[in-house]
Amino acid sequence: MKQFLTFLILGRTYAVDLARVESVLEGTTLKTAYGGPIHAIGAVRIGKESVQVIDAAWILGYGVTSPGPASAVVILSSFAAGRRRLVGILIDEMQEAILLDDTVSNGGDRIMHELAVDTLFSADVFPA
Image (cartoon, one colour):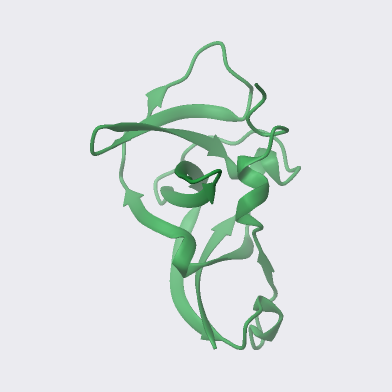
């Protein structure tokens, strides 16, 4: 069994492995990003660290979106080359944490899509 955090992006339910979630920031004001990639919509402070926030809808191929009244930022982590990296994703609305048999395909009567966290840290998302 594995725990997943579920949330909405443009009316679709997505899930991420709860072990990859550092925090969820609701009602957070983003520091606007200028001059970066179109999907990099801002940054938030986590302790002393500035964490880039990306538009999850754009990354998933749905186009650019804007924060709404129920939006939140999910801070996700990745460990590569011996260091921890963080990225925030803008989501439309939080859902719940659920326990499933290893994959989101067992999501009961809801259609869910698992968000591949490591792809958010790729060179396609964060070009050098």
